[in-house]
Amino acid sequence: MSIQAGVGLSTYPFSSTDGFWKWIQMCEEGDVDSVWQADTLVSKESMLECMTTMAVIAGAALLDIVTVVC
Image (tube, rainbow, N blue to C red; front, top):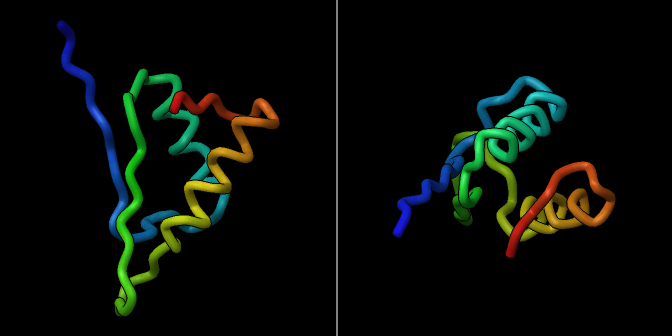
């Protein structure tokens, strides 16, 4: 039995979209088991909308930009 780790974001700490994609790629290359995205209705912090973010990552996987295992 092995222990795997997932990581998540509650805010958007990146200065550009390139930073986000670099983070996703680092997670993939670092064998991170899962990427989690927080969801909220109201926030003073910059956040990505949860379902859209997961759909974009899944779409990138279909285009072989990143690899996503479901």
